[in-house]
Image (cartoon, rainbow, N blue to C red; front, side, top):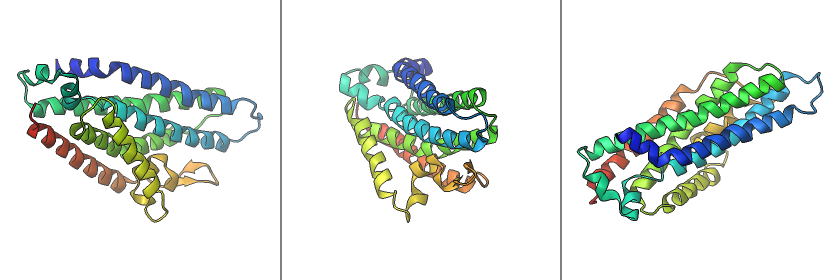
Length: 238
């Protein structure tokens, strides 16, 4: 029942986000493939895929912030929280379902748009390596989980239907501006998602092994933020 409730609350935002993320990056790749001479090398399409990845990453963050703007605080703001808190389930379980369902939607919004963009590149361009697509998806997921956790925490602290995503976007801009400095880029989840540190401008490829330690660090930060979110909701008076 809780999973169905989570789907009903987010289905419109999720489906609109998914449609936009399937169409825009794929159209960008298709447009890049048009007018390219037959002798164009694969690195042209890898460059386009890398640019398309940045587009997907930006749209992914926006989608996740809007997906996670719900929750008990939003329900309290619209006067429906009392119907949820009387359900025979703990707040821990409510939050667990919300987090797991949100992560499932977030990962879907990373994999399906990238898969569509990769297929368009291979059909209308030149064959490209699936390993590059998987590397990009791993970076989006490994860095984006921090923004997911931030959006969850903000929605657990800030009441108001649109106030929470507004605050979340403010944190995103702070990350882009403050951590955009070369000295701090290594700590920026956005920079990690974009893959700039691993992009070779000569070959237009992501190089090196997947940075598992960086992914683990992001997961630890996200887990801490999600744990704080659960604790905050458990202490709230609804």
